Image (cartoon, rainbow, N blue to C red; front, side, top):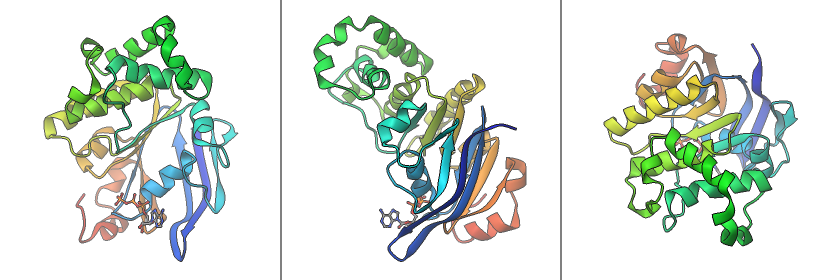
Length: 252
Ligand SMILES: Nc1ncnc2c1ncn2[C@@H]1O[C@H](COP(=O)(O)OP(=O)(O)OP(=O)(O)O)[C@@H](O)[C@H]1O
């Protein structure tokens, strides 16, 4: 087994709250790794430690041979980590194509420079990459539409294209199907399966167990800031410690 993301001994306090308590995580190259756990378990806090939004008090985060601790979010992005977060970070007044070109330019140049905006028309290579990413999420036919007119499900797919255009080595997904109707959720599961089938490593935080068990090849269960179990999906269902953690909350 070769791990692409290795997290060791992460602790994070918010005042008196011990939000992450000695967390270890090994994400294998090419696999879909889910992080699940009850509300307030520390899932988002952990993810924020991977992308430079939070700095852990102690511990290490190594990605593909590089320590991510102390790097800024855009520097982490440059190492090959892209993310799709719950709050859509799209530009509603721009077209889908323009939305996808922005992260492609940011990846190439280190950060998006507004001065590049006027010359975007000349960026044919970036434009082609953006079109390919839109096609990957089955939205090639909507490239010229403004993002404001998209349904919620399509907005999430656009965000996925914005992550994929960066050709990441690791894709972080925070509740990629939150708020979606079942049909949209299933379409997203199929899409993510196709993408993972091409070898992209994914870390996914998700409450919907249908999504988790459809996609995950490994699951870490967080409860009160501690990884209580890390195992294969078939070992997680019915695991006494997991059942206990979820008691009174979601059901597996
Ligand atoms: N910036 C912050 N300041 C203070 N406390 C915080 C902060 N961020 C998170 N917390 C607390 O840390 C704990 C873990 O929160 P976190 O959002 O990581 O949990 P989660 O597992 O992602 O929950 P959910 O599934 O509800 O999104 C919670 O008790 C939360 O209130």
